[in-house]
Length: 488
Image 1 (tube, rainbow, N blue to C red):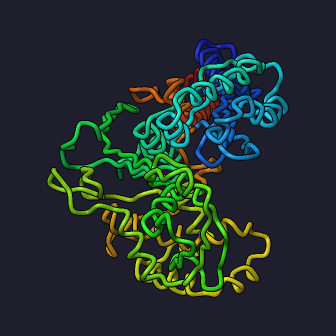
Image 2 (cartoon, rainbow, N blue to C red):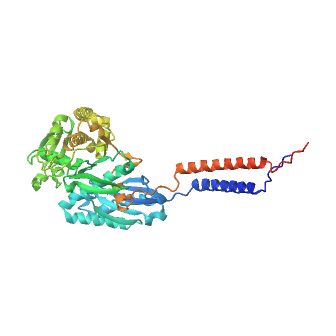
Image 3 (cartoon, rainbow, N blue to C red):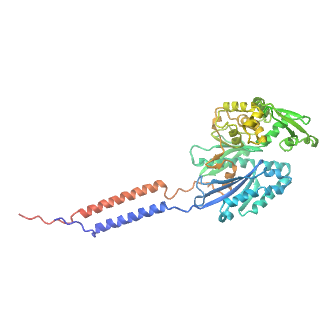
């Protein structure tokens, strides 16, 4: 009769100890890895004080993953009522008061316990850059007024300043590539095209050496070095460029102006002051400023484009190649994200995703549509803005093709975008990321146990347990000794 190995033998005790240890380890790792943690968030506020309006953006990110790629997202956006802060030059206190409603929204949006730890920044762009040129004293007072409002809020005030055009372009480039997670992709980065009311910016990584130091900016992000070409054209935002175009057509003695960039049937009495109240155009006499002219539309895309080309200077270039007005620009390459007014105008005209030839056909058809038909088709759109879409769309097309040198071959590389991953494309997110050092110079450390490693360890422990079970079964079923055979 066979005698099995007793369960309390050394071998069985050893197997049992390893079996219990493996079970405990497997359960502990599974609990820790999958433990539901209470998500804690941090917040940041950026006010984009543009030439035509101010917008407040609230960003949030998981506190324990502050330096990981793509973790910052937009939680809330508030559009400040009224025009941009530069419009308050004659009533500077109003600039600060205009921000009050959105700051109240921020108080409701961000948990009260986080208020004092939430940084708030304000960046003023081309509107304030123009006011600084025109009336420095008023510009300083406007900035002081907005500073007082932000300092009175419960948030951590980190500064309000007028950012340069190059910074605006570079921060927009950081935003679109951060949201698109391009900084860790081998495919490369996306260029950025920004169009506001008073300026336009182009920023992209060029393969060739940038010949103009004024147009070069360098960044080290996630372990990679980037040298970007960037330039900002002050006075070439869609609102200021309309003044430039009208200036080319108007003389102080004119009482009527027929404009191919406005629809047939459009007619509006306008003051010269509305055209010549900007440092972007030549000043006229006080008497002329008080005069008015009748602005009439003739709705001709080809003539409109030819008139817009007059505001560019394509003849002067001291470098090997230029965009316009003698500004150096290397050849555009790669894909581009075109946002802000680029998107809003082209989206309204339903010309995003079109070829260059189809874009031109679409603009021609839209501009020749009579004004009364345009009004009937868009009853909810403010007539002031509605009247300018023919001009703005033609200007965008001309700027991209003739100014920045996009062609029919690479037109498809322009993506007109409003949001990426739920966050608005623009310079504000890149501005906050830069000031808070939330994009590390070196690549973030990898997690201690990524998902793949966790699955592999679970499989290993499970296999180990099966082996122990097999050994235990083998040991328990094996005889410890056999009786001697009987001698016959």
